[in-house]
Each structure stands twice: as C-alpha cells, then as structure tokens.
Length: 164
Image (cartoon, rainbow, N blue to C red; front, side):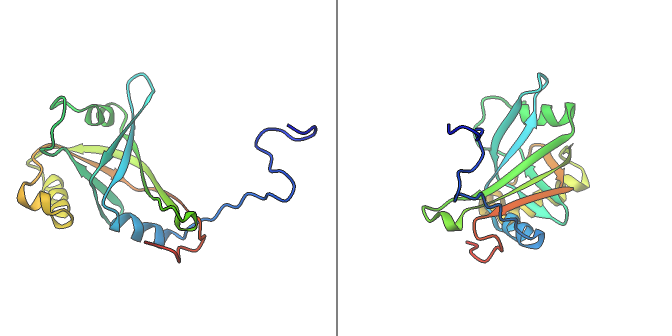
C-alpha cells in the first residue's frame, strides 16, 4: 500500500461511483423480479438468508411457506420474524455486461400471517397471480409480510435506463 493511502482509498485516477436508482424504478424492478433473498436475524444475532418467491403490493412484500421440500415444517425464517419482527429483502440482477448490474434492498418491520386470515388469503392470491406454480398449488403455510419502509437501490447505469 503506498504511503499516505489507507486500504479502501481510491488510487489517483480511480474514482468510485455510486449510482443511485430512483425509487419508482426500484419498485418496478422489485415487482417484476422472480426471486429475491430474505434476511432475518436468528436468536444469537446472526443473519439468516434464504432465497424466496414473493409478491409486492403497495408497500408490503409477501412471501409464503410453500410445498417445496424443506428439512422441517418449522422454518427458521418464520421463527426469526416472530422473535425479531424485522427483515431485509434484496433483489439483484447480474449480467456479464457489468454496465447492466443493479440491486434493490428493502427493509422494514415484518410479521407472520397464519392461514385463515384475510391478509394471508390476499398474499396467497397475489403470489398465485405472479407464479403459475402457486396457481396449481397455493401455499398452505404461513406468510411473512415485510412492510417496505426503507428502499435503497443501485444501478451501474445510475438512472435505471438499462433495466432488464
């Protein structure tokens, strides 16, 4: 490391660019995405990250416990949200053309909706509209609802014009 520079400081001529994406474009990309990652915090304070199918309606992101094979019917993500009612969801896009990279991170309070309730039924209907697999076999397990109160987004293009 050259004297006078610390790790993480750009070398002369190498400027870091942060390209924020406008929130309406971030919301559009999240709504159109097919998969995301849900992060919760376990009882020991460690992050727990899982891929999810989801639907976005207004300011709420829904994901359900479905019929796909799982090691246990008692999922850690559900227990984590019950114990610490907050979650983060990240949606991202990768291509070999790095000028088309982007990500959106959504954070907020989260809750668990049990089968039989009105919000659970609404969430399952939204998921079934988005995923043909859920039309054939609607999720029967609990639904995690994340209230999207914080949106952060980045796009290599900066203005969202290179969406996919």
